View (cartoon, rainbow, N blue to C red):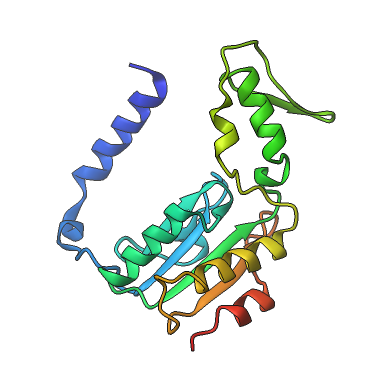
Length: 193
């Protein structure tokens, strides 16, 4: 057993021992909203958005981008579980700003091992085996945070499976202060109609 696996299982035992009435939480989120945000470990949506278990859906991926799968989850969140408002929350100092599709594809073609980064950019530690399958993936990297939030809100709002009466708010989480900073253009574009 690895150290991390052991730590997770021990933490889970402690959590489960005091589970209490959480077993009775309903499947639909009690506060009827969903958050699409980044998987970055520095972000804790429960803390920055004041959530308790059962309050909201939190959908996470690299960059908090409105990928097909994120939109799939949002549509299920609304259609089957009754969410009425959605938030797109990107963040400062995001790793998705440090590369582009070409860099990612080159790294993966060279090696499947973990890459490293320094002042001169990303580097592979090892040679092969790699794969060119990365050429078929849109990595949804970020060059400009406010612009990417706006793009994602627009992609969600313009999706044919998303009802027009769901508001989609756009924010950037500041990793230095913990504050949510509204992207007014995104929130305006995400207004319910």
